[in-house]
Length: 238
Image (cartoon, rainbow, N blue to C red; front, side):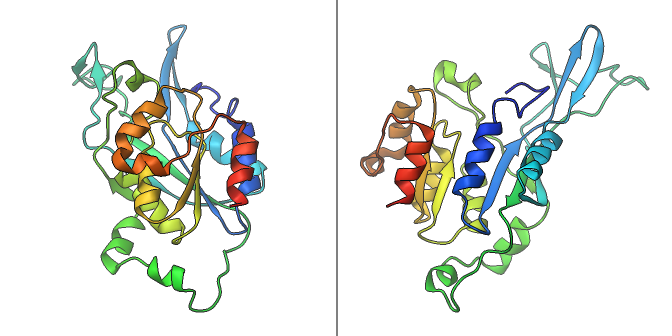
């Protein structure tokens, strides 16, 4: 994703996300800001604000976001842990980006349910879960891909992130969509939580990794080559 314009290649995806969301459905986007030096000038690219702008242009409601602080993320310079800028001397150092955003959007008004909906009540969280998950700052150890050259081609995140979001914003039996499937972290979390799932990924190499991740459960996953629209539409008719 281009740090200067992360919405360029994602606009069609966001439109499709809006189309398939149920009224009151929730979309979550994990994204970090970026820094670059171009022609000797330092630049901060606020990717999160551009994603918010894109979703609001589509008419979705922006909800309070989560700041995900990764304890293992350290500033690095030439392969070594270091703060960038002038080190211990003011004023030329700058703050290290060690957090990512989990942006949260809703399609329209609150989702409605039948009174005492059994699936909804089976999906409730404990007080401890509610207090921790609905706090704005999450401290969850980051993850790293271990499958050779693929580790730089996908944004890796730990199982805990999709697990929390799926618990927070869906109920048992709901359909979860991940338009950037990668190695299948969200797929595994959704299946473990008794949700249906659709995901798509351009890199075919990930199908092998997903099968390895799922183990014996991989037999429940149907791998198909089809367009995004066909994939989502067919799943919604199940």
